[in-house]
Each structure stands twice: as C-alpha cells, then as structure tokens.
Length: 450
Image (tube, rainbow, N blue to C red; front, side):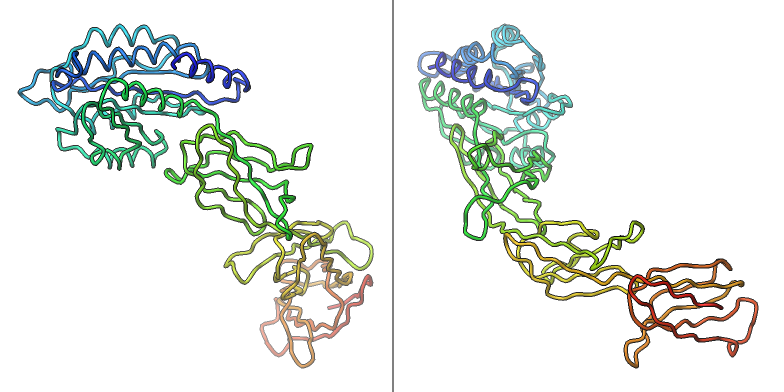
C-alpha cells in the first residue's frame, strides 16, 4: 500500500513544473506522554506509532517538494510533577532529514504530561517564513489536553493567520473525536491496522492533486465567458491564495486548474460588477466544477465627430445596487460589464448624466456625445468668476475661472448657452460684477473678452 501511494504521488509530482509547485511541509506532532507507554496489541503505543510513522516517512522521503519535521511533547520530564512546557522541536524542516527523525524517535521514551495546545501553538515558529509553502500538522496522540489549553482556539487562530492548514489528528486506542473535531480532521485508530490506514489516507490527501473547472456562464447558461481574473480567497484566513485569469482551452472549454483541496475557498470573479462563488469545497483526487452566471456586454462612449487628442473625459459607471462607482473608463474605450442597467456620469463640462443605460449580453452599447466647442476667456486682470450653463430659466454652475491668472484661458464646453459672471480682484465693490452670455457650438471657438 505504501509503495503504491509513493509511486502515485511521485508520478503526480513529476508531471508538474517543480519551480511552480509549492513545498508541502508536514510537521508531525508526536505524543510521548506517560500514557503512550501503555500496552496496545502486545506492544507499547509509542513503539507501534513510531514504527508505523517511520514506514510512512520512508515512503515519502524521495518525493519532490516535500519536507518533514518532528515535534514531540511529554518526553523530557517525568510525571509527577506536571510540566506543561514539555514540548520541543526535535528535528526541524530540511531536505533529507527522514533518517534523523527515525533515529530521534528511537531515542525517546514516554515520560510526562500532554501540553497539546501549547505544542500546536509553538509549531507557529517551526514553520519558518516561506512564500510558496503549504504547512500541514499531523498530531498523533492517545489522549487529550492535560494543561488546560484550548486546542480548538489555537488551531483556529493559526488557520486564520494563514500559518497552517486545518490539522489532521489521529487518536490511538480509543475514540476522542469530541475533543478534536473542532480543531481539525480527526481519525480514530482502534488498532494498528486502522492507525496505518489513517496515516496513509492523510498522507495521500495531503499530497494528492485536485483539479477544478470554473464555468462562467453566458445568457444561455453556456460556459463561454472568459478572460477575467478570478481571485481565490482562503475563507479561514481571508488571504488571497491564487489569482488566475480565466481562459478557454483549444477546444473551447474552461481551462483546468490544479489547486490545494485542503482549503475552503471564496472565488471572486472580477467582472464588472464582480460575481462571488462563496464556498468551494474540493475532494482530493477528484475533478470538480463550479459555475456562476456572467453574461457580459460592452460599453463604448465616443464623440459624434473626430476625436480630439487633448479631450478625453472620464466616464464613471454606477449601479443602483452598489454604493461606490463600479468603474471609470474613457472615450473610445470598450469595456465589458455584466448585462443590466447602469448610470453614467460623463465628466465633460458640464457633466452629462445618463440613467438606465442598458447593456445587453453579447452586444455593444454605443453612446455618442456631441463634440465640444472651445471657450476662450481673454482677460488682462485677475479676478473672481464662474461659468454657468443656461437650461431654460435655470442657471447651473459649471466651473470657476479667473482667480489665479490674468492670462487667456481655454475651456472645452459642451454645446449650449452659458453665462459668465466676473469681478476684478482689485475692485472691492460687488456692484462692479459683470455678466456676459455666450453660446458654444460643436467644434467651434467662441471668444469672450473681459
């Protein structure tokens, strides 16, 4: 069984580019408290656990991108008295250290108490910083916490910090799942055969590859939408685990992704607006498919006439379902959006506001605006003034002008009627304020002399 698992994992490992594969670091936390000296099927529980663990280590020692380490508790101080600091990293992570771990296991013997929560907490320092590592803890024990620690709280904190993935726990001799289910994946080993099987299953789970296909569905529920980034977020830690730009393969199907199945993910599909796949659970060795509806159309805003090199106002895209702006695009830029109705603010002078612009799936919505004209303000003095757009009887503020310079100013304004209100900086009487109305025509220049 060990040989088959080893061959399977080696084959999977060799099929991937080693430079891009994460290093799997497995920390074995071994119980060497006094209770492990008890007889179990003719031998002490510690000797049986040590022997089976050594066999497992032999089966994985030649697998690429795998490192192991050993932490032991309850082995340096006799009980009584109780010593809740009796936990130590016996062999740290490195390549080719399996023989060192096996040798150290043979040197140790059960003596003391069980500071399990403290051992798990101190494992935080056993996993040195690494940019591309999966950190796994496998706890082997025949009892429960004896030092008033909260293993569930410690496990949750380490997972939330992104230091470890959910731990695996093997209970030897009797079922203690009630104490450990909250901390990790528990396996009950009532005899040697079950212990061997549990350890093999865990190693297979840890090192197996799992594939996922994300279907981005169009208006007909076909997986044809693509070319958007998908962010995979570890739901336990909140950290970003992966970023993939979705693609269709040569046959037109969504590409297959190899991702870590030991993590529960939230997938953010970064369409505009984004689509969320809230909980993705994977099973090792199996291909999974998840889907979300992403029918998209495009929006293009352009001028009715020729484009001007120095005129490119922003277009703010909003939706009634979102408080903040969804996106900012520019003239002559085609951008994809989830089909639906949107509000647009085109930041011309004055701004153009459009409500309920409909973007249909697989279609382009084209908005054309009039070419602006140019208002040239000719002045020889500084002053305080504003330009207003005249909408019937209403006077709508557009922009303030004139206070910083006595030089000529040029402004792009949308076609229409305007009023300039101005007072010289050097005349301290409001009655000297002047008003001047003018009209802007598309692609024409209008000069206003102060």
